Length: 299
Image (cartoon, rainbow, N blue to C red):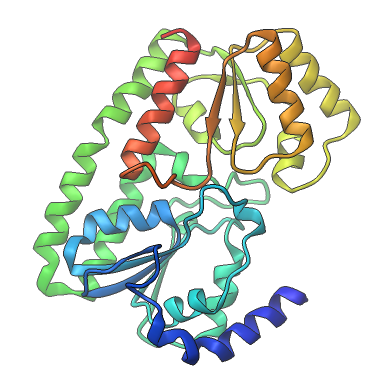
């Protein structure tokens, strides 16, 4: 396949760019210590909060305007992975390009932490957007802390203290989820993709979108005529309270649904698959999206 050929070429170039990667990359938090590479910037942000000044984090997917499903790795990514002590990947089929890079680069001391394995999220139809599973983010954070402590036992106390600070900082998110669940139990909502699916489930909302529509969009395919009509009728008929719109991976079909929602007076809440540059942390990003959803529901 073309992608495998490209990865092979990238590996050849690692030696050329290795001296230039790291602190010079805008996706890198350079602070010395354990080298960590995260496939997505939200996992990198969480790792950075736990590791603090004792780790150096490079996040591969960090552009909030790009479609993560169409991401193509380059030599800098391969070099970062080759030199990492800890690699954090989402898994569940979301970032398979990293798996290929890991296979193509040799590092006997490297540990790979796969979030889907930590959360035991498997199966043929698993929702890969695991960073929206807010109640289970502590499990991921603890797994990251454990791997950092193994890589750098001398700084274990620092990692443990940072982990506690991170876990405590999730309280406002938990309160918002509880508020939505209490005020709007089972309120019907729709989404263009399953991106916020775990979040909506935690908040006790009912997803009314045709499953085939969301799955087709997620897979990069055109939804069937029946699913498209069902989705359009759902929105035009005002049978949902809110439309959650993936603002990062759009198409004429999803843009049409968004326009129908606006015409029908249904609030549209934008969600993204990558932590935006203007959000200082994973927690701030998720809090702002939750607040937008609460407002859209009428809170």
